[in-house]
Image 1 (cartoon, rainbow, N blue to C red):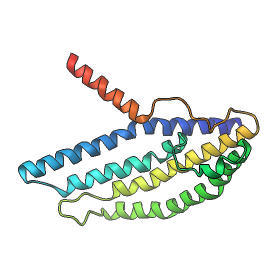
Image 2: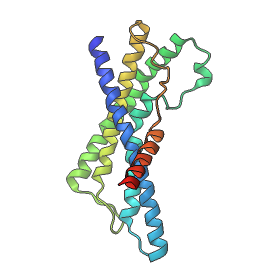
Image 3: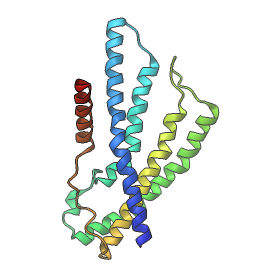
Image 4: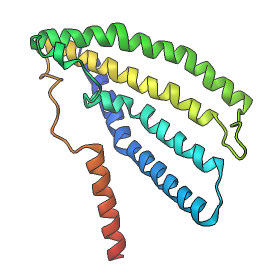
Length: 198
């Protein structure tokens, strides 16, 4: 079990680090969207590449951050049912969910998603839109995102089992940490302050 707990901590660290930085993709998507709108209105110029990179970044942020979201227990749960169960009952619902629902769904998506990505990569598939982008980079986000989600599901499963064995504290208790949004706002503020000073 000690090896599994070390694996769990490594997965938590990986998704935690990715989650802190992937939020920048949403900011980039928003900035590109705003600039594209201004350029289109002011100069009457636009590009499908700008439109597509927005949804590439937005889709990548959601796919890559799925594991981070699970780590922070922000996925939707049916609290009406779970709240009626004891803590052990809630943990067992999680164990069943991670084992028999999350893992098989992730494996199925990887089963179809990896060949889909490889086919797009080999063919150099391009967008059908004039001036559009190559597609395989966004296709790569499907196996990457679902691999990270599945690994986090396994990490959560390990923590639930360890909790039932009395090895760790309750893993369902939310940690009091800054959210990714708060960290992003703080980074932007520090960046702005350093630019003012410099």
